[in-house]
Length: 130
Image (cartoon, rainbow, N blue to C red):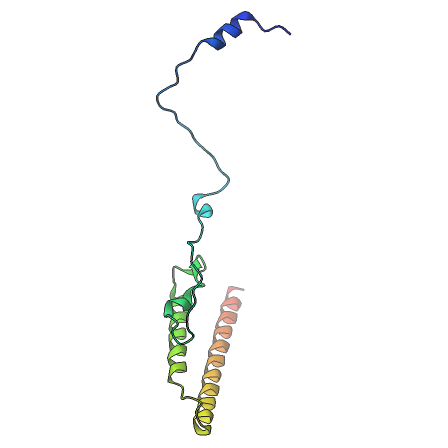
C-alpha cells in the first residue's frame, strides 16, 4: 500500500497549538465517594486517663455524625456511666465490695430496663408503619 505524497508533506508542516485548552474528565465516582477518612494515628493511653472524645471515636460521617438527638442521648448515657463508675467505692474491704456489687447490679437492671423500653418503642414504631 502506497501513502500519497501530499499526506506525508502535510504531516511535516508544524501546526500551532492553541494557547489554552479545555480538558474534561468523566469518572464513575462522585467527589464525595472518592474522599477518604482523615488519618488518625493509633493512641496509647493509660487506663486511668482516657479522654471523653475517644468514647465517640467510632462515629463517622453518615454513621453517627453529624450527631442527631439519638447520638446525643448515647453520649449523655456514656457520660452518666463514666460518672457512675468513677463514683463507685473501691474494693478495698468486704463492706465496700458488697456495696459496689449492689450498686453495679442496680445500675445493670436500670440499663436492661432502658434497653427493653427502646426495643418496645422500636417495635411499636414498626407496627404503626405496618
